[in-house]
Image (cartoon, rainbow, N blue to C red; front, side, top):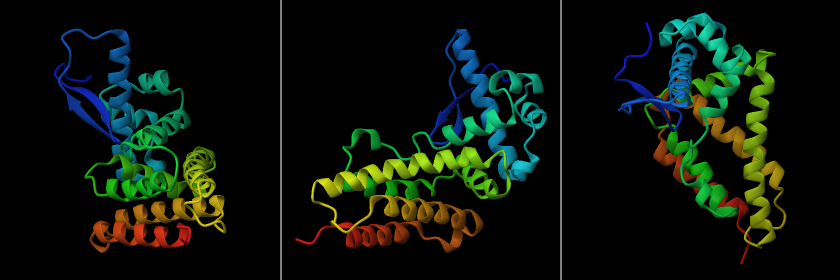
Length: 220
């Protein structure tokens, strides 16, 4: 049984939600709907049972497609995980593309990441599980290394820009700051997953902005 005719699927900030379909879909639209449906199913499977429970057959069955459909769209389990890790983080922090590189963008990125952990969606939960399990999964490790490297590069560029502009203290190492910041927000995500009640996101956001402002701002 496939997707109901009335229920297309759209990717929004790491989640997959129903949207009203157009009267007639093109082949590209049908492909996009199928891939989003399969990704949504993969997210559910990972949140429920981790990477070890993720199989192409299980994802296909959950989404209402065949195992062959999953292979057709993603090639393999690794291809599925690569797409999922990328799509679950795409647009995770809104409006960053509209900001110029620099300290304010760095702060907005950290703040927006933690803010997004409060969304009641499964996308970020699946990503955190992938990130944790990558340490002991040879197939998953290179995928998550690439995601972390991309995140670090983005943050490092913001800090380096702030340094060049004289906004960031001259003794700051942009690469070290990026490593610390990625570890910090990923760790907060894991705590949020394990014990949501223990993580007051509003207070955490306030503390992080205060911390990074004090450690990065150049002295006047």
